[in-house]
Amino acid sequence: MLIAGFPAGAWGTNCYLVAPGAGEECVIIDPGHQAAQGVEDALRKHRLKPVAVILTHGHIDHVASVVPVCGAHDVPAWIHPEDRYMMSDPEKALGRAIGMPLMGELTVGEPDDVRELTDGARLELAGLELSVAHTPGHTKGSVAFQMPENTDIPPVFFSGDLLFAGSIGRTDMPGGSHAEILESLARVCLPLDDSTVVLSGHGPQTTIGQERATNPYLRQVAAGPGSLDAPRRGM
Image: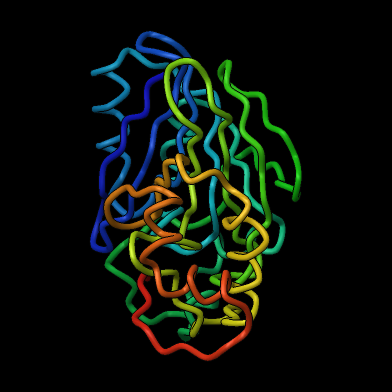
């Protein structure tokens, strides 16, 4: 198994390339702001051929390079239908007026081939199996991707902006909901094995066991309903 990741752009959004091994087909997760060159560098370094782009949600820091990456390799992009509008209208997703400057000139819009993700779906791409979990809270159409354990690596959970090392995604932008993100944490994250590696949309990797023990939000939902005021991350 090969997972190559790098932080891209002004928001340091993690972009991942996932393949059975070097020299094989791969999927690209969240090619965000200024990620296109990093994607090309990783493809050359590991001799990979992309077959799809899959997106954890529609915020511009996660999708800004979708059009050039998909166009360069003639591959589809997968996104949850509730976040699809964000690719063409990023200002609306951020609560900004149309025409306000947004990190300079960005290529917004949809690639030629867009496919929609659904909760519980199983994607078989590039010789990989990824299960899809709808995880609203950061956005209405947020999803996470899980890869089952195999002989090479423990289970891997691409959490997007649902769960970070020590924190969770912010919920104060259009489509965000603190109650929904806590429900998503309880429903999707708590049942995962402690050995599950968490590769999130921002920041370092962690494990479910580490977050179960130290993350105040995961501890809160494990303990039951209650109030909490702790820092959140993400764009």
